[in-house]
Every structure is written in C-alpha cells, then in structure tokens.
Amino acid sequence: MIVGCFSRKTRVIFDLHSHSTASDGVLSPRELVMRAAAQGVQVLALTDHDETRGVAEAEEAAREYGVRIVPGVEISVSWSGRTVHIVGLYIDTHDAELLEGLRANRSGRVERARRMGEELAKIGISGAYEGAYLLAANKELISRTHFARFLVGEGHVKDLKTVFKKFLIKGKPGYVTHQWAALADAVRWIRNAGGVAVLAHPGRYDMGRGKMDVLFTDFKAAGGEAVEVVTASHTPDQVPIYARYAQDFGLRASCGSDFHAPGEGGRELGRMQPMPVTCEPVWFGR
Ligand code: AMP
Ligand code: MN
Ligand code: MN
Ligand code: MN
Image (cartoon, rainbow, N blue to C red):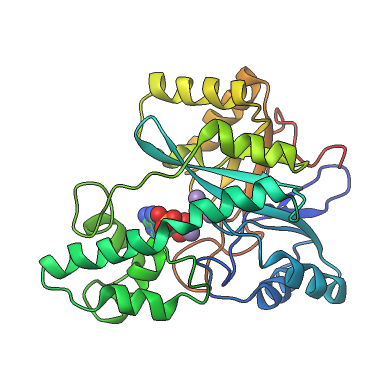
C-alpha cells in the first residue's frame, strides 16, 4: 500500500516538493492546492524552479481548502561541473537577496532555450523553442520539461521518460551546458531568507560514492541543513542509503513527491513511502 509521508505523532501528511505553472508544473498554484487537499495532503510546499511567484496564490487557496503552505523554491545549482537542485523551505518569499539570486538564475534560461532549439533543429526537429515557449506559462521559466512536452506532443517521442533518455541530457541532442548559481550562494540566499536548505533528490545525481560524499560535505559546510530522503526520484533501495547519509552528516530529512502534472508518469501528490524511523524530519519544531 502507498501511504503518505506523515508525522508519526500527529499523522499529518506532508508533501514538501511540488511544482505549479510558475515553473514546469501544469496546474496553477490554486489547482495544485485543490488537488493536494483532495489527496489528503495537509502540509504542502510549493517549490517551483528558481521562482516564488506562485506562493501567494497557493497560500490564498490553501486558506479555503484547509491546507498549510510551506513557502519554498527549488534552486538550480552548478556544482563541480554538474547540475544539482537545492530546495529552500520556510523561506521569506519577499527577501531581496533571494529574489535577486533567483532572478539572475532565471535570466539565463531564455538564451539557453534558444540554443536548445538550435541544437534540436540540427537533427531535423524544428520549432522546438517556439513550442516550448508557448507551453511555458511563466515566460521567464522555460525548462527542459517544456521542451520534453513539445517533443511528446509533436509525436517525436512517446513519453517524457523517453525524452530524458534520448534528448536534453548530456551527450544527447538538445542538451546545452549552462552555468547556474553556486552551491554556497544558493544555500546562503535560503538561510538569509529564514529558510532551511535541502539537498534535493541526491539519488538522481549520476555520481559515485566518493563524489557524493564530497557533495554532502560541501553542502553541509555551506550551511545546508536537510536532505530529501523520501522522494519519487528515489527507488525503495535508495531511501535507506540517504537516510544513512542524513545521519552521517547530521542533516534532517525531507520528503516530497516532486509532483509536476497528473498522468505524466511522476508521483501523485502526497503518495510516498513513510520516512525511515532513524530520520529527524525537517518539519520538527516548525
Ligand atoms: P531544467 O531546470 O530546465 O534543466 O529542467 C529540469 C526539469 O526537467 C526537472 O525539474 C524535471 O521536471 C525534468 N526532468 C529532468 N529529468 C527528467 C526525467 N528523467 N524524467 C522526467 N522529467 C525529468
Ligand atoms: Mn521540474
Ligand atoms: Mn529537481
Ligand atoms: Mn522539483
């Protein structure tokens, strides 16, 4: 049976990672909150990529639906030649330094998207930039997901999962390298905005044990306080591995579905395996 990730004491169901149309989700913040409520989620973090503009609408809807919103963000970071994601939870979405950092991260996306379109055109797929642009509700936030939806919609690829095997990743057509924020900057913006920095879905990063240890060491040194242990990106085998990392590095544990869209192959809101008992949840004391 699939259950939510809940507090052992109060049985409140938490989902601390989700996306709306403010980034690459397909539901508006209001629709997302409605769906979360219908799925029994009681505490929902909206964590759009490099963007917090959806939080106000989510908070307004949450008051109607009896859901609690944790203001959040998912910051794209370049670390040691790779992209990693740092989620910020409990942030002040009006913090000037954070907003400026996010704006800077977003500003490179349009040029990146144009180049992605050019790369795809080289292999005979035309109109990808324009297609992705039309699919992005937030024009400052064109992501690879919008390109992926375009490629599926045009019949080039059968589903999103296949897109990210054949296209848009390192070494495949449509991939372009990009410089995101530095790890230490992203963590500092989150902390100075009163938030908790969470290393997102570590199991998704293609790196060996040695490199992963360095990532955790750098993250901790920068002021990172938590790691996603339970996430749709982790297989059941990976959950105890990252629960162990949390213990070893003195990090709290977070859980989130990383929900983007109904029926797109990702996990439903709130539907996750329970947090391992050894973990100290990120929501303790909040
Ligand atoms: P970007 O920030 O533009 O590089 O886009 C990253 C987004 O692409 C992620 O947040 C996911 O939504 C999506 N993505 C990356 N890899 C996959 C995958 N294997 N399957 C589905 N979506 C993916
Ligand atoms: Mn995404
Ligand atoms: Mn992510
Ligand atoms: Mn995400």
